[in-house]
Figure 1: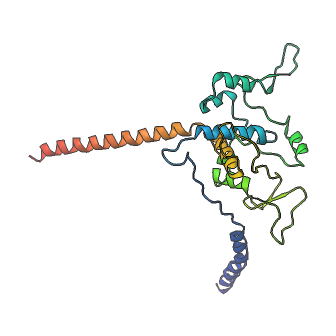
Figure 2: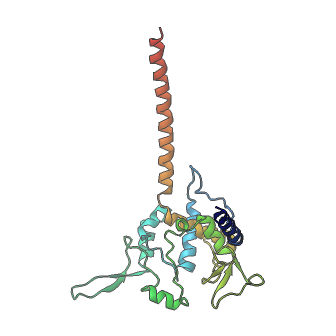
Length: 255
């Protein structure tokens, strides 16, 4: 019994340094105020459109959104003609043709956004060995969701803290697990201009593209919220009716 107790104490003592390291390595992601949060949350369509512009002009060179079809953009307020015109600026692979060969054609509204690279090996070769992840579900795949993506885009520091040595080709990011990230800083003040005159400083740009990515990951969010509200209202109504019926029935039985 004594040996068991000593062993347990020793194991606990040895675990303390590791617990301390885990605590030090824990990254706190600040909370942001998003229009789509809450039971009544909705997407700001203008913000998501600006975010799409950021994705198209900045992120799409390396990152795909393979679950997004061109026709889905109609939900953001783009007209059918605008969607068709945008799709036609892309090429997608199709086939086989009558000769059994694959071929390239202009994209249609029903097509999905093509990937920026032909395959994963090509993507790695163009990015120093790192594979840029697909962004379709990024805000749902990472702990912290949109808050994580937003702060990651702004979390770069020109110099790592004292005592930290970066591997070749890596950048320091205080919100990325391990703090070393293969993607260089992409978002900066004045990176692009918005047609509606919205601010184009780094925080606003990062927030817009994060909202767009969350819309890609949650395209039915508003419909779910609306359904949830209706269900709650119906449940409340039927509860009140059931209570009144119960009182009416028991009132007669008590006489």
